[in-house]
Length: 139
Image (cartoon, rainbow, N blue to C red; front, side):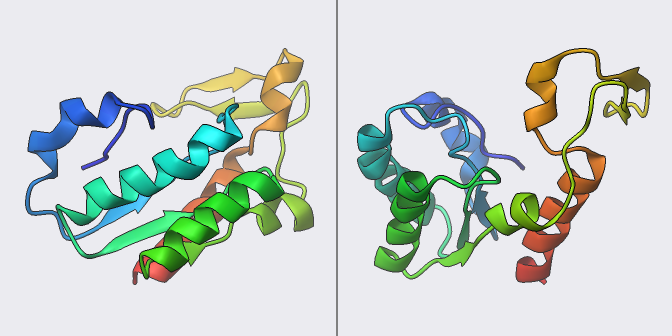
């Protein structure tokens, strides 16, 4: 089960799906523009998640942003949650695609990168490293 939706309210539509869960992983922040609002809304989201399970993990962002990372770390520490940093993956490894690279969609269908906007995102290897990092904490 994936709890998805906007930080500001989309999760409310998912409440019934959240009952009796063993684990919730909060994985967001990259596309947040209002960093001041994020400080309080991340705490609100954590409080909602804790109503459904005491086992909540929160990850940092792939793209390093000190302001957002501080808000996430504060939410984790304030609520005694496990925090999983991820920015090190982007900092230490070449895990962004280049124009001309081939990536694969969820159906394993290949597609070639033709636009600049996608090259700021992690490639398949980067996504694998993110997943393995989070899974390593869950195990």
